[in-house]
Image 1 (tube, rainbow, N blue to C red):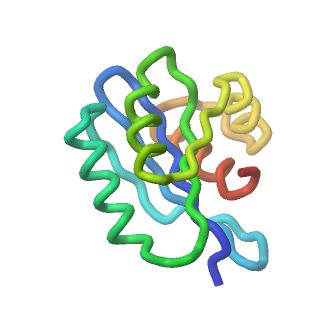
Image 2: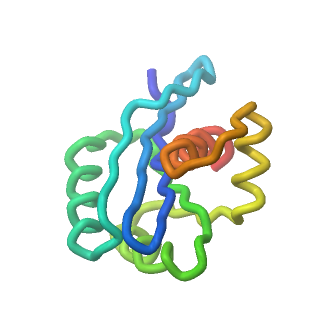
Length: 123
């Protein structure tokens, strides 16, 4: 049985890499899916609609994103105003978390997966 979902978002000026993870009652973390969308209000709405349709359960859902200059601000505000639990993670904390998991290479997809795992384990 799933006890929490987390969406990790790695946001740049033009695009957002997303990953969805869950944690079960045995504390096993599983990455379920990934998505890429543009850093625009139109795509934030699509993301919200997709989450609303996919996660109509009473299981908690958290959204974690790295503080990336100003690029994360519009997405964070939009999702927060829609009622999501949004956590903004300092870049050095996210980097050290990925290192602690043994992930040395760094790209947007790996960062999104790391943020989603961090969300289910620590938020």
